[in-house]
Image (spheres, one colour):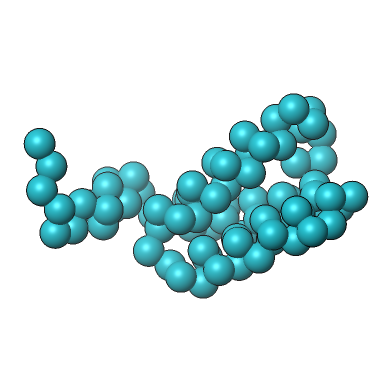
Length: 80
């Protein structure tokens, strides 16, 4: 986060929000949202909040395999 170009911060924010939201952990979603909101409220320190979000999301990204996420998202859904 510290060295990312300013033009990439919006994409990083979207990626972190998506990575948190597709996991079945309400605490991860809640704290990710809080960090992203604080980056909006305090734009001077947005990199700090994005770094905190990335640090928070990292263990869940490593621990939850993509197949598990896909299965959780498809529970009780009929897909073509």
